[in-house]
Image 1 (cartoon, rainbow, N blue to C red):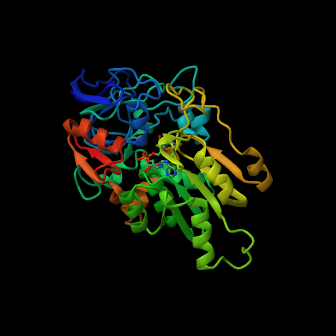
Image 2: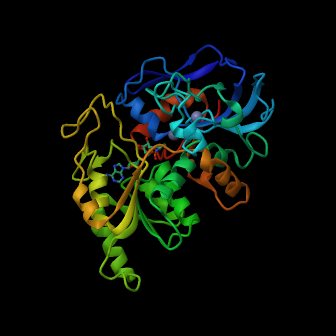
Image 3: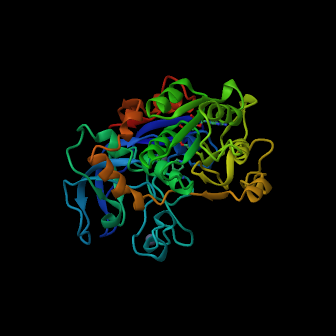
Length: 390
Ligand SMILES: NC(=O)c1ccc[n+]([C@@H]2O[C@H](COP(=O)([O-])OP(=O)(O)OC[C@H]3O[C@@H](n4cnc5c(N)ncnc54)[C@H](O)[C@@H]3O)[C@@H](O)[C@H]2O)c1
Ligand SMILES: [Zn+2]
Ligand SMILES: [Zn+2]
């Protein structure tokens, strides 16, 4: 089969690799119809997290079941399915508690695993013609319709981007009438904005510097904030002040919920050529109101192969802990426990309430991957979310 393969820092290729096959009776093999490229792939592409040459990339698969292992009972050949990024067994104690991204059986001795992901188990990626899906009864989420129909882009985002955007709003405690600030207008930040609005947030601000991404935030119903035009914390406070703060909140000009949809490769606002891995957290500490919440969905890696000067390769960072303590702000983190949201969000899509696919900016074949990775990595050519159709 053809697959997108990590070759070296900032170089992916499209190569012939052995076909994905059934390896255990609980597996299925899915023929991929859409497979998205993610900001997480860029941490590997940029040589930051130790991807080895030959790694088949991709963890956002949508497709049709092609072959079925003997012990699979709930999925049939020909079913249209989306497959969550973080594969899981469905029955270990963490899965049973709803923490599928911390499954104890998919990476023995560790917890959690993902497709095509350095340091997250041996599973080959989904930017390929075929994908082996272990524990298929748990990991295949059935979908209506036909490949290539009007919901193809909505459904492929159920694998990761939409569930992670939703997860971020869950971590940040977004509820009806919340005021929300989201840093990062990539797919995760944009779909966190979409999720916050679906959850009834009163105000949603999205901070970034890439004009096309900020425009998309506006189209989703959020207020775009360009951090190159000044301190985003002050900009948001000023926007709120001018609009008139909610009655009783006059002493608190910040927001109740803050979301980090950027991660450790955050741009330094004062020097755009540099990274500042603590910058977004520091901004959120200033912006979030006393008793508010912060949800961190952006990735922080424990093995940074090229840390910037102030950071350490083990991911230790200096963060304003005392500010969070003083304000009584809760901070929650982590990988998405995809499976607890996939069905819920699928049904919002099917009901016509959620339209995550509107953020998809580019489509291509596997052969287009090298060009799309390069443009996406530079946040150039309008690439916000690219979907490969093998
Ligand atoms: N928790 C999870 O399970 C999970 C799942 C998927 C992705 N992620 C992570 O979420 C993050 C975002 O993913 P994405 O696909 O949207 O990536 P992306 O790279 O497309 O988006 C990140 C955005 O952040 C912006 N940005 C950079 N520095 C900033 C700053 N200081 N302030 C505000 N915005 C800034 C960039 O301009 C860019 O638009 C990545 O770290 C990715 O690895 C986490
Ligand atoms: Zn992803
Ligand atoms: Zn498990």
